[in-house]
Length: 502
Figure 1 (tube, helix red, strand yellow):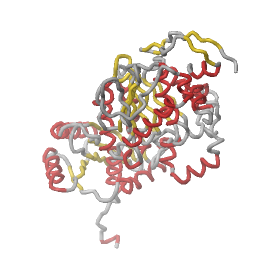
Figure 2 (cartoon, rainbow, N blue to C red):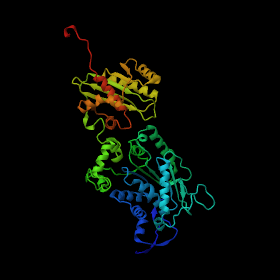
Figure 3 (cartoon, rainbow, N blue to C red):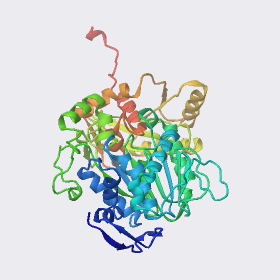
Figure 4 (tube, rainbow, N blue to C red):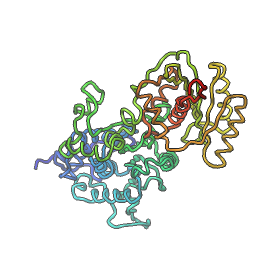
């Protein structure tokens, strides 16, 4: 084997410097490559690792991340496509090899999984190939849970690099992260399954853990890596991206995503990194088009779009399709109007209070003229509802107001308070029955038939986004209010027949 003497350079790796136990070692060319980039490191320490084109892309971004040129990185990938082997096993070992003073925190949805990853990282670092590459990065030889003189911690929760400041800590999402901070924070799949992903409570708990615990462990110039299979539009990745969009001062993320089937043509910006054509498989040697077609059938449309295509919201909606809706500048002369209010319990929750105004013309066409939506306290909500009633009366004349009564004594009291607040207006209360999807079916049928139009307004985008994600999206208050208002207008008019009509 050809050997050469390599003078180890002081490579800029973000907040750190490349360091080893010896200044000069003799290495083979493949060792030089393995010490310089993650992909070659992976194949050197795991020769049977199967490399597909998307692994090369992932590794190129992780190399930028470890060098500090990318500070916030998200990787979206379908299940069982090599994500965790690279991110949670090889990558932490590679970081500590390049810089044995690095401090790494790695988290996953459960402590058991996090600890299993921890043990895997230790095995990699103990193996002979790793020690050939990074002789200056060593772990203590025994399992140690408490610190004694001249010993370094090594267990399933934490291990320290002998003779250096480097440390690796792991925890389940929601668990404590004690001790020192982090130069590199890694989160691999913060949500376990569909049940947890659909739980508002669990999604909120993950968010609060990230903001109050994980994020606060950052050292200066620390990098954060979030690698996920998307479960829900309101998952941790979704919230972070929404925050980045809404506030330029928030963390801005580099996003690398790999749908199971290609979704763009050669002109798409992603085409430079994704060589596939539309409909091509991500890793055909492992999952062929036939395999993916079967998967799509068996998991269903929603899970296919979220878990495999990395789009938690189906591309063309569930019950509603975007192309059904014509947006008009003004509505024609209309006959009857209904404003329906779907009230949220209180401010600060995920639900919104929504009031949808729908009108019907003589030809049976429906026009959604206005949507009022917000998260308010009970007093603020009642003031907004009364203010909206006055504006509707001034602009449209006669508008019938309906609002929903929630179950229980609290719902009754709230409904009575709203009716009293609207004294002088035509106001009605109803107790709803059945699930939201069933109640929305008549409205969806008329939308599909092209009989529901939207009057142009700044509420259009949010309204259409919610409709086209229903029933899979985070919120459904606008759908519920619109469907209820439509159902009131669409009720057949019953009139008493005269004696001549018998």
